[in-house]
Amino acid sequence: MSTVQDALQALTDLTPSREQILADTLAGLSRTARQLPSKYFYDARGSRLFEQITHTPEYYPTRTELALLNRVLPDIARVMGPRLHVVELGSGSGRKTALLLAALQDLVAYTPIEISRAALLSSIDHLAPALPDVEMLPVCADFTRPVDVPAPEREPARRLLFFPGSTLGNFASEDALALLRAMRQTMGDHGLALIGIDLHKDPALIEAAYNDAEGITAAFTLNLLVRLNREVGSDFDLDGFRHRARYSTERLRIETDLVSQRAQDVHLDGRTFHFEAGEAIRVEYSHKYTDDGFDALVRQAGLQVAQRWDADSPAYGLRLLRTL
Image (cartoon, rainbow, N blue to C red; front, side):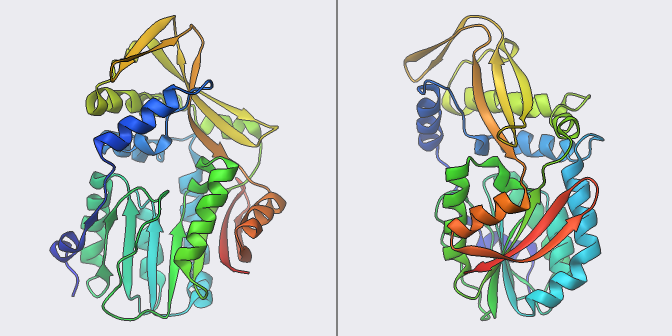
């Protein structure tokens, strides 16, 4: 029987160290076109803010994916079969996960891989009591790097990777391809992956989702600087940068920046980084897909789309992948 305490005892903690965060930050600020990794959005406050974003009127992806899951879960469970070990990349709050796990037959184990320890523990606290017969094997780690998945006590029929929320779209094309290749390796020859993808649609609808009227997304983006100031000792002036998110119809992606409001210097680890007024730090991509573009991407990774489920409006999809 699985309990919250059992899950905590099984926790594999590979939280990024201060040294890793510092190295990534210095590398990003040293680029000609400056960047900061979006994976560091998700400290405890960042995870709470993102959960609030998913409830805003403008942010359609979460409610659309939840509704789609509710509609097609019987078909998903039938296609996947029994005795799965579900491995989720970026577990977040676990709302979608709870629906999926409850629908599957004779589920063997669940391994959430989440960079935010707070979000990971919250998810397990919610899921473990509801699924007492499922072995919980949480891993606190950066899933963009190779992670050894714990082996459950009971042998599963196959492994299913669950990657909802169109999180794949947060990666530049070459990084998305690398992640898909790593997923293929983790799946194994007979494994599957269920991925949520946001589809190209009215640019105004997309852009509004990343610029909510309450300013929660702006607070979420700026919280990245709060975290860096606290954890690696930078001195970003929080009033000196503003959130900006624009949709590129040429590249089919939201490009989110923190824009310097004036000429200013930022100091970190004995180094000075000068910003001109209007200079931007790219902090996130959110790619939107066409079916042709997505199919071409996954084939490069040695995968193929085995099944498609779509929401009609706004356009959003779940894709079941298998190895070629």
